[in-house]
Image (cartoon, rainbow, N blue to C red):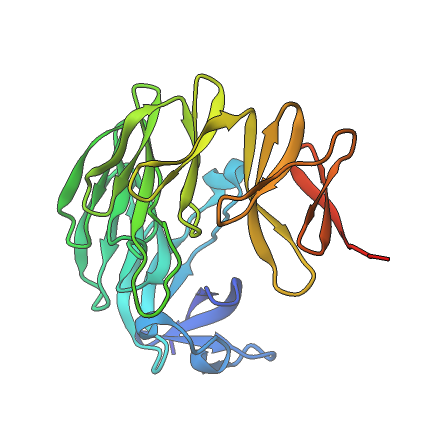
Length: 306
């Protein structure tokens, strides 16, 4: 009985499992190296029952790339049947109903049937369409966006193009809107998930949107915040900002860290700015004393009142 050694990638647990191919089916190997159903050794929460595997030697270490002889494919977790033969140079897990594959230095996407749904013509791209339904792709040195069918929604004209981020939390069944940070001619801006500008590329620096609904932006060395409509929610006034600071004591709330007059303070999701009193490195927010240093929260203490 012909057997081909293989390796199965369990994306849910980020681990590799020894396997073997027998009669076009992928099996895991038990402790005695006997074939066993792969579903007994992998997480069952796999999108579309599709799991990637490879034959040959695989190394994800950059300087060992010349040693990589791996070829990747996909099989059904439920029965081990190979759906996509190991022909690709690399294969990502299914995120939603698309999986990124690479062949001869070009990227494209497969659908759950294993068919090529986005042609392998891109020099680089993100791994999914989960946020906003669009995926950043690179052609040559420039980035644009495609939809799940491979249709170009935004032509590659950007020096950089981030994946889309939710600009607000999903509450009461209302979906959050999405925005992507882009850079063109050395300036930053934001696109919505239809490929239209939320804020044109006129910013000297900018950060991704946070789900609280704001993004920090900079012009002429001064920082402020815009909302999901591209309007300034907080005027340019800060020397520096750091996104997504956290403090504890029960529910972990997120705050922005902001710097004014050489001191760091916080701005909460309601845009309330709290700066430290002169000569101290902490702010009092509610019943918590938050210590700040160099743009980060170093510790917190409950305020004790006499």
